[in-house]
Image 1 (cartoon, helix red, strand yellow):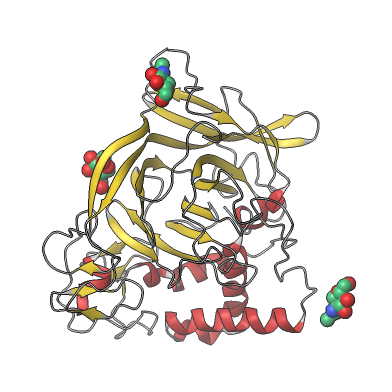
Image 2: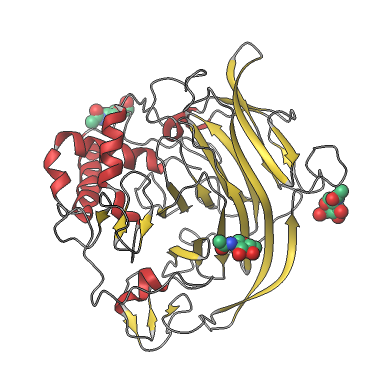
Length: 433
Ligand SMILES: *[C@@H]1O[C@H](CO)[C@@H](O)[C@H](O)[C@H]1NC(C)=O
Ligand SMILES: *[C@@H]1O[C@H](CO)[C@@H](O)[C@H](O)[C@H]1NC(C)=O
Ligand SMILES: *[C@@H]1O[C@H](CO)[C@@H](O)[C@H](O)[C@H]1NC(C)=O
């Protein structure tokens, strides 16, 4: 839920604006120019409000960046960015941002790098060997495409004949690195009592103002901001004058002091996320106790986050003392999918690494090379958070001011995150790390 991507997107846009030729260079170069640009500019003007400044707040950063970027520019950059979320898939639709195995529409962008203006990353060597979407635990397509069987490191993309590290992917057959154990906690959001209210043994509310990230919502426990209906939890952010001071209300539910989990678990959530500009829904985790000090030292796990300002892109990230956006070292990745549809968002959390999946497709692995707490504070217990933020430094980056209360693609429509279930299973490692 922290604000790293604000700056990333901002600089990507800035680079795109200043250097139109970047559109002719590869995705990798645009990313490199982005990070170089940010480093150089922030070093040159450290007091510029756009250079991220940490607050002492527990969970998030304050950023004084105010948006005002043209939507045309946003769209241009989204198109340029299309292929970066399609590892192992040769085509991307610049309109939907979806990845495809074949060019069903003539406007799909070829992500193979040839004859497409060069926007795409280099093709996986020995292409044609694109694997089908793997079962949970796989990730063959993105990592294993270049490996002839054996194993692949999802971090370096190198191929290996043996699984020297427990997070390597197995490139043929069923991945046997973990076994799903018993379910230790769940909420199916079935309204057993008929009250429409969440089970208070599982969830409590973080009501009130959130001073972080310049978010605009006031969180309440009112039924119109969160309720159970049709077997799902609905968290709704909406325009509403509240206490004469706020213009938007929403809800933030947490399992804090009720339930928490540490390594050796799979967190599996099925959700459908709002798309309105100005929305910033998140399914994420914070530490139950600040064992290593205040944020980000004790860690943050973002299982999935999206912003309505960027369509079709979901993010999974961790923040730690050593890896966070103050240093531009946060460890995250993104995946292109239509998040307005139902998808499974899953993390597998083991003793020394964590993996992120959308519908069983691996798209991010975090495996620091030491277990020191500045890199791996995830030996502790974390609680779960479900919320929809409004606006703010990242959620509102494509808007100037708050989202409109009359435009349909902003808050002319109430913006609802639906959660079908949260299931937490034990995860039994089968491979020695
Ligand atoms: C940034 O602000 C600090 C504190 O106000 C000041 O000491 C420092 O000289 C400023 N640096 C630059 C490069 O302006
Ligand atoms: C509420 O949650 C608790 C703990 O998970 C569970 O024991 C109880 O059966 C739930 N109540 C309802 C009405 O679902
Ligand atoms: C989503 O998760 C559920 C429950 O584990 C599973 O039955 C379903 O097949 C999953 N769907 C996808 C598309 O992965």
